[in-house]
Length: 122
Image (spheres, rainbow, N blue to C red):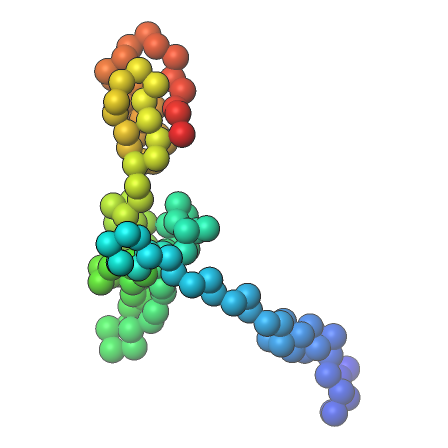
């Protein structure tokens, strides 16, 4: 039984969690063209490159790209959109083909280089 004026252990833990400072956001980097880019540390993680907001009027969650004006009400669509911003960092070891994500290169190797070992070069 909880006495008035005393907080339970759960309440104290909740307050401690609320008091923890959130890490400072790193400054966005800029490409040579002067255009801001997302935090490079998280550049290859779709979940770090969009903001989630709730639209009270439409009663829907809105996913907003942090790199361009694109927004969606479907999380999977937002993640797919993000891949348009990712530089082509994976390379086929057998030709000049490049792409992202890694599975795209693996599929390329299976289809265009049958019988070859499937490994992707970063």
